[in-house]
Length: 450
Image (cartoon, rainbow, N blue to C red; front, side, top):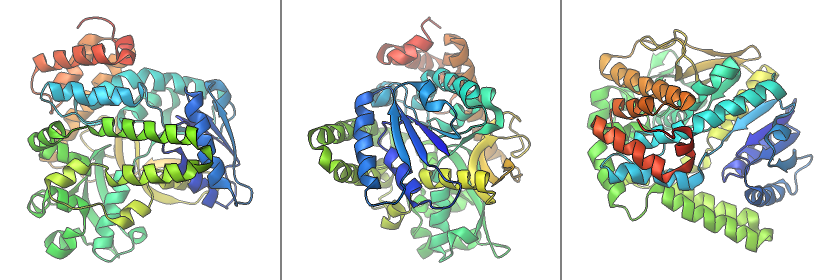
């Protein structure tokens, strides 16, 4: 099979290739085509992959290209991991919001809207080229904000595009392990949107064991999300929230922590990745070692501000070693092409799975995946205190999609103003002006005045 990786010069691509090297079942990926707008980044990542492949029998062949059509033509699967505006755009997503007293984060709040506004048109054009050149391909979307981008691409590709995120599976893995259970043998009741969901139940041998976990101080302390949010709050919710909900439940504290830091997450990543690419260019024979060092630092500092606020300690070593989105993506591929039925949490069309949300909305819920495709499982209704937040954020996402596809600054202001982490219409207008001034790719989508 042919796999096209869009954003193929990205730092996390070796994780995908390493997972492919471990896959020996058939059919399997035999050809990987990396596409990126930067030939230089492709060269660096190709060197890392070549060193990963050393010593493996029959590793997937790797090609690189800066031509999108060449990458997509006759692909069986497409991984979309693009970053419109690069990490420089991410730093602007963060700083413009912080300068206006709002949360500065990549996918949550104003930064997520800005990222989506400039990415949606590009993602839709990619979907159109997939439809033309590889109409039977499945697109697995990693591009953030994942729910919004998946929903936009669905307007072209329908059910053949699926969004993937590793936050829910990590939460479930930690909750099961805290109780001494095999994560593969539990059934999660998880529901929400990408980066906005809750683990409401965890069934093992026909019994929901989540209440026992919530009642056990020692076991709960083993779950990073419980340490981040605090035992009292997760017990109040009666659920374990996705880690990104920290930005909603502890907004003031998060803004202060991110604003007081010397560098935002985006600025730190930009500096680290610049050093990595420069190191490989200087000493290509050590490309893999350089990548491993940079990856360890990146993983260890992920969402560090939330752990610091709650004095939650360092990330668990087992978590860092367990792998993430690349494993979910390959399991999804295996279930589709090999008929290996599996249940996994994915970003898919709602239909009637989550009561209270539009049928066309992309939601993050458990799905059954097999040779017939992907089917979301029905979920119990969310209580009002959770449903209201989900409905509001989904309305923001859909408004942002409409703004990006129409070029409407009025709709863009509406998307910012409706978000629960933006405190006024005036601030919404200033956010759009600030992003337009700092991010050329966004200004190209929304050139006019609101």
